[in-house]
Image (cartoon, rainbow, N blue to C red; front, side, top):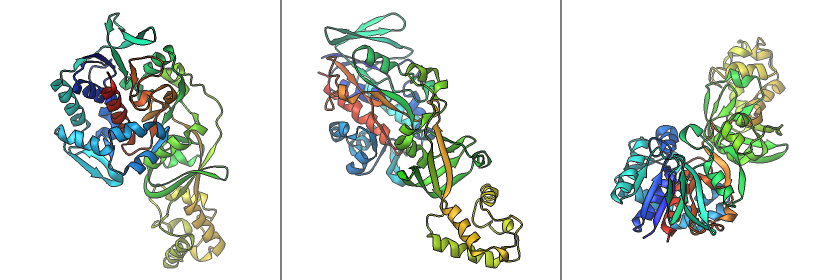
Length: 428
């Protein structure tokens, strides 16, 4: 039996502790917060999108950074196994649109509760309010942890599951990057991911709070299409957010500056510097269910029904109330012009605006608003089968501290479960 020390009591840390304890090891979890799973508690707006019930091909395709590294981990603990695992712990689950899996109760606290109960059953010793200050090594092997309070804890193996930089209020302050760098590991520059994006157009603020469903969103760098998705989005006072935008940020974010990231102390520690970003074009098809010709016919029918009305009063059926004044402003048709005086060219130009509503993406929001971190401990320095360091024997990594990230939909938590299980199961 080995003494295994787990740094971090989040999703990956708890899974790693359970896997290691299940193999008979003496396991200690060190968590800086007053409770376990603080970030897990707020995921999915407090509902906790556990995993995704898709096929393995889709699972791999949904990983943005280093999907090949996860081959062993995903096959060693699949999304199906994750669902079985939680059900066997007594957690009732349900699958919603997009194959997203949630606890049936819609309470993330129930996920944390069953994990904590399983750790207690297996004899895992949980140390709260215990922040790790340093990872100790000797002759190229892990030897112990130095706690911030000054106490040194010896151990045979360590699993670093300290998270990234997103939502620093939950304790994700990049400690793991420092521990890894100090012990000879390369760090891929951390940036915010699954994060809202900023735009420069004046009308973003006018649309603040408006949520659009069933729109088609695409992002271009010049003429090159970088991303395309169908779904739901939200306008904010600074730009855009919502599911399709968050996923877009994980794909195109590397081309944008982390807009207010440099204001975060944690981001500064990770080497974030504010610089001028290139701009990308966001195109929104407000009526993706209609072709341009069908939309033109739809507008024509609406106009024929209201041919004596002014243009500004004849488009109520086309848009939500908040969007209407912006579309009239951008439509290049005089608002007071009678509908029966609008030319075919003006009408088709308006249809083109609806099919290609554009905004200019100028940057990402900061770590305070990011769901996950992109970047982290380079996977080239980690064994993909065991999650063990290639430089320090007995040191393992799991979860967001690694340079792994995925789209929204439960995929990032599946990375946490799979890498945590691999690390905990591999400890010898």
